Length: 353
Image 1 (cartoon, rainbow, N blue to C red):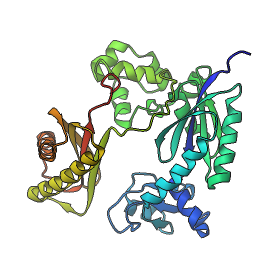
Image 2: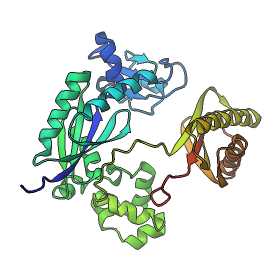
Image 3: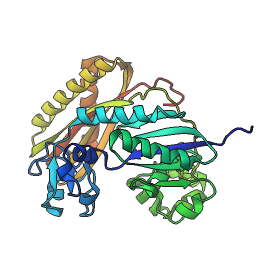
């Protein structure tokens, strides 16, 4: 009997955090629900997830809660309950592991499945039914011949649908879409590509590798072109997820304009990150900071450490150095509404890090 074709399925839970909240508060079904921060739109925080009913008002993840409240004053605002979301996520992943597939967890609400099947949509439908029966949650499933195509396909499958995206229909479906429709290409990169006259996925796929390398570097430039072609790896690994970094951040309820106060917050965040690093038990190679100026302009900078370390003093100094580097390009004279500190671990395999 011939071998069955190999496929990648991307399972993405629909409106995950909001769906969990509605599941334990059935009276909220059909209402616009927004999850984020302490659930108080008068405080500074951002939307973690919005139900589809809330999204109809233009509410999106990452949006300030205050903006969401203006868009939909009747929305139900709820605080984020991370322990509950993690527990529900584990239930879902346990359901996925009951299938004869390889499961690679990507986060609370998504996973890749390595599947061998003549018709992968049959497996996808079985997954959807069992997840619904066991957890009450719905999911969309993208089917692809690479991880990238499966991930992008899920966007067409939402909510609760199934969509196949392969080499055969990639150009037809994606060719005329903007470059940031592809997983891995962000809004900033899209704008830089537009400056080069590259406005669609097909433009990017046809772009000159050398021109891209000059603009984005010898690694990233050709990589963006490869993404536009929909290629990449099809391997799904069951190895446990290993975080690449640990970070902490604080959103100030009033803008911070005093540098000494900002430095004090930086030290506090760096020490909390150092505690996380110690708990992780892995050395740090790089430190970064994130600063969000009022009203909502976010920038980041990072610096490499001389030697990998778990030393709290070195981690703190690395955060200070990153903020100093940041201030060289973005003077800290404007009001700051958010500050973050990130520690990046040494990759377990430098060749793939």
